[in-house]
Amino acid sequence: MTPDEIREEILDILENIAPDEDLGDLDDGVAFVDQLELDSMDFLDIVMELRKRHRVQIPEEDYTELASMASTVAYLTPLMKDLQKA
Image (cartoon, rainbow, N blue to C red):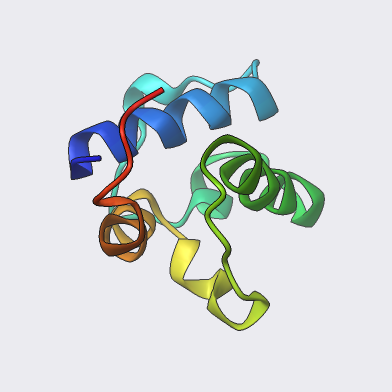
């Protein structure tokens, strides 16, 4: 998957987790928790959804790498580069 496809995938996951949030104004450089009303369980849902959809394993010590859209895409790009968009 390309970085743009990964970003779209994360947006799709966020839409499912937080359907009332306006993701159109999401700033890729700002932490999700500073822009969206996400709690720790929502964050775990993102990780679990990535595992379910793409079998991507994210170690707990790397969770901080998924703080913002930009850092999430940067972290996932090498892990998902060989995956096809579903």
